[in-house]
Image 1: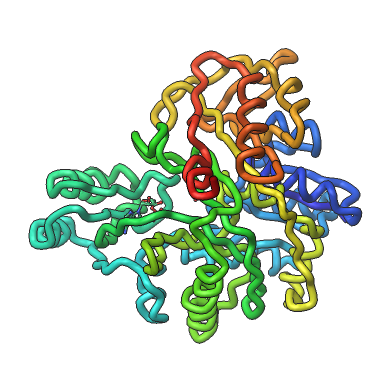
Image 2: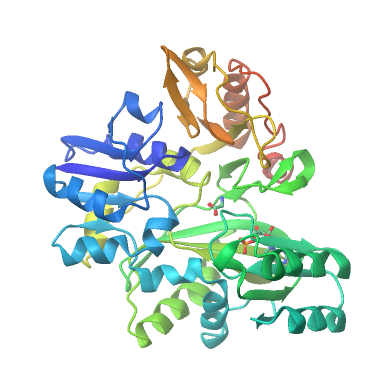
Amino acid sequence: MNVLIIGSGGREHALVWKILQSKKVKKLYCAPGNAGIAQEAECVNIQPENINGLLSFAKEKKINLTVVGPELPLSLGIVDKFEEEGLRAFGPTASAARLEYSKAFAKEMMAKCNIPTAAFKTFTSSHEAKEYIKEKSAPLVIKADGLAAGKGVVVAESVDEAINAIVDMMDKKNFGEAGKKVVIEDCLKGEEASFMVFTDGTTIVPMVSAQDHKRVFDNDKGPNTGGMGAYSPAPVVTDALADRVIKEVFKPLLSGLKKDGIIYKGVLYAGLMINDNQLNVLEFNCRFGDPEAQPILFRLKSDIIDIMEAIIDNRLSDINVEWKQEASVCVVIASKGYPGNHEKGRVIEGLDEAEEIKGVKVFHAGTAKKDNNIVTTGGRVLGVTALGADIKEAVENAYKAVEKIKFEGMHYRRDIASKALSLVI
Ligand code: AMP
Ligand code: GLY
């Protein structure tokens, strides 16, 4: 079959790598892809938000399955449009993806379905939001309702910081339409984990657990990023907790959506906050996490095309999804300045040497080919991913590979998975 993957990040490179292992795949395209993906699939220069362009390309190349990586095309209804034209696409429809592109909608669904989450209020008036902040006092979490590339959440430690966030989002309109509405919620403490499932709207198949590292610097210091590294499994997600997440979060959510006429199909991601026995949902994403996809797909034994096709055809219950026992770790290498304005065009060295380390694959994110060199083009540049018998070995393999890679201004966290190591050892 002919497959098209949409996106250009580390998550999409991991999807390319995994999908190419399927015997069913004859030809793989990626739009727009990156320099690493170009070594494995044919890249086409169509942007993820150009839905009509992608549709024409899929028809012309007789694409049998389109796999959507990022949230933006999902929020623009790419799956609905492909289906209307008789094409198969993996991912939720726009009305189901609303769980990610409207935080207010996600919170209302959680409240309606009795899913544990922080107490919240939604505002469309900046004056009322500021009054509420003064009344409640800090810490509070301020969230722009719409998509803001991971930058629309402020964990405010003081009333001033919370009010400044409202000024940025609602008065200065720094996030455009995404900040017209805001959610203000109570601040929760605990350990975060990423919990993803495959679902066809009825059957739920949990993936192995993972933990992301949101802050840019070691020991969770500095501003939030898209994610500086991830590992799997996350010991904080015990088997008992995983059962509770299915029972208390995913089942009620899918039934609640169904009652409103929405069938959720694809990958559904719950960002969790865990504190002793307390479980709360911070957010939903309508796609694989990035960088969580890298270590998770590393551990998936089953053919991912079989899973995706079963979801589209509503027969996920027929599929046996198997995982490797080994652990995996992904260390993200970023450009100087990330997550703020970052440098571009730096030549990357040592990629081949890094992949010579046992169990290692270097997934590309912000890279491009220029004059026979691979150069940086984005904030997150590479996701060095390694498998090991346990987390300790996976961490050792990943960092051995990271040390082989060089480009000017590169930075990465040195403590990926250290929380898991302290729990395991
Ligand atoms: P979100 O995109 O909603 O997951 O928020 C991004 C990050 O902000 C999360 O990964 C948490 O680190 C933090 N966060 C979000 N909501 C809360 C909350 N209610 N309490 C504490 N931290 C939060
Ligand atoms: N790593 C978090 C996300 O993909 O949203």
